[in-house]
Amino acid sequence: MTANGPALSVVIPCYNEEANVGTLWERLKRVLDGLGREYEVIFTDDGSTDGTLEALRRIADGAGGRVAVVELAHNCGQHRAVFAGMSQARGKVVVTLDADLQNPPEEIPALLEAMERNGWEVVGSVRRNRQDSFLRKLASGFVARLARKMTKVDLRDWGSMLRAYSREVVDQMTKHPEHSTYIPALATMYAKRVGEVEVTHEGRKDGPSRYSLGKLMDLYLDLMTSFSDAPLKVLFYVGVWLAVLGFLLAGVLLAGRLLLGPEWAAEGVFTLFSVLFFFVGAQFFALGLIGQYITRIYREVRKRPPYVIKEVYRGEGE
Ligand code: UDP
Ligand code: MG
Image 1 (cartoon, protein in one colour):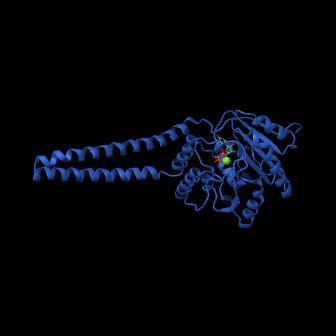
Image 2 (tube, rainbow, N blue to C red):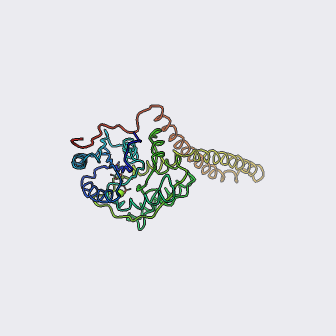
Image 3 (cartoon, protein in one colour):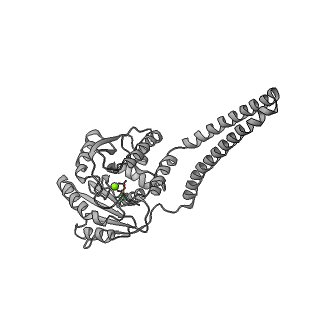
């Protein structure tokens, strides 16, 4: 399959992007035609409820076999949609990109050039003058710090989905698809040489972000629990030290009671209460986190696929 694939595949997840895909394809086509290599574009329709699927099919019909539309059975989320697209991609290099034109397609040549010049297997992009809300940028700063810690790879921008991956890295990722994962971080597990280039960033062309607060929180949890058991270790050590502290405190209270009399100890009752609440809180936190890991084990054991492709459409007359 890979032997006769084109030089480049572009994978784009689309969730209710009816208003954006037309312009996106026009701009993308101009850029890719200018590259002078064979290419294919794979749009994944991530269970859209508007006319995205029909719009994508029309694009495929007019593209002479260079565009495929992967239709998912239901909304699986951006990262699984990218995975599903990657599973169909045949290019030697696979570029991913958002459908809302926040990542200008005109930056793709720079990405590929840097990848070839430096021999990188994965290249990310750093968004210059990022056009997102303050809160969104704050959240991204948090994600970047977490991702650096978890993967031990020193990249600046982890949230930008304008990225390029070598065929080997894509093969590895699609061979072992994970349910709950953050693709930019996952790719670093299969790549040794990872780099970044600066790119421009634009405002969303149509409509609000397709990420609700809940979806965003899910993504952060995935990032935290998919790459390391560090949160559990921290819990363990915090637990041990809390227990030691509680034990010492009990000793102090007992000594106070014996040396200073019952009045002193009665006042101490409230201290004891606050300590108790602290412990209860810590326990709940611990249980919640353990629950996260168990959820993940449950998901893997169940062996339900991370995405379900209904159909791959490669345009009429092919
Ligand atoms: N997306 C998707 N499935 C979802 C949510 C988003 O395929 O459940 C796609 C969306 O169509 C877009 C990309 O993922 O192409 C990034 O989404 P969005 O622009 O809404 O996120 P933001 O830019 O706010 O991070
Ligand atoms: Mg966007």
